[in-house]
Length: 354
Image 1 (cartoon, helix red, strand yellow):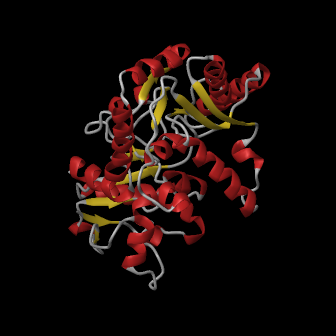
Image 2: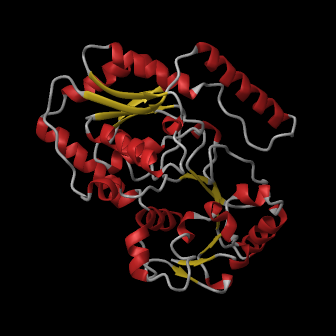
């Protein structure tokens, strides 16, 4: 696949906004291909970048759409897209972060995003996984899935922020309402969110599961994000991170509910660690849904069915034996390895679009 991106768009001070496929390739000259494979799982032989846009199959907008907005460089982005459109070369654009943003309708682009409401997006928007490091390798020095014995009562895990305060929930919904109004008044450019309080939703489900004696709960409930630890506090950050991943590893199923954006990073972390996500669908988009039957890999719970979450888990669990449970763990890890990492995801996506 022949790719092109405008090199002069790159801003090293805003590297967090760089299109994800470019991160392994925009590196110092001393960065070796061996390091690229080790850090990103990608070789310089996997994707070919051309100096001339006319030779390419795809053009990539170097930085995220959010970057061009905050840097007041939307015209630069639009001019590049229009040039590519005239050459009939598809342009890939990243919408990063928790919020959606409008892209002018006269720009013909392929939008990649982790977040978004499925019912509101057209066919030019594609779900992108959250690209994470191999947590098994990083924290446990292995890539082998640990097996678990089958118990009649499944173990459901969750480590994270949840708040059952109705007052705080109302505050969150009012804040979202205000932001939505500001969007319609053209004061705010981030697209509207559903009127929902994610921390309260998580708390509602956590305490419903916690009270149900038909399952075993493995919960660590945080009052603040990452337990309020400052990221500069390396010792305690490592401690809480390890607690988070130990929680996944010591569970059969893991509760995965949206955060501020309509997506769940925990979904990908759970798959990578070879466990089964309990995926609460809040009109989410999911990657490669033409080739991945997501219901084969998760306990699928529609938002309107959230009060039956324990019944959904028990129904799923009752159909498994110990062998089948552990085989599902392996299938989920395999899904992450073969579809949801940087190289396989972009290989499949670009081939399918092409």
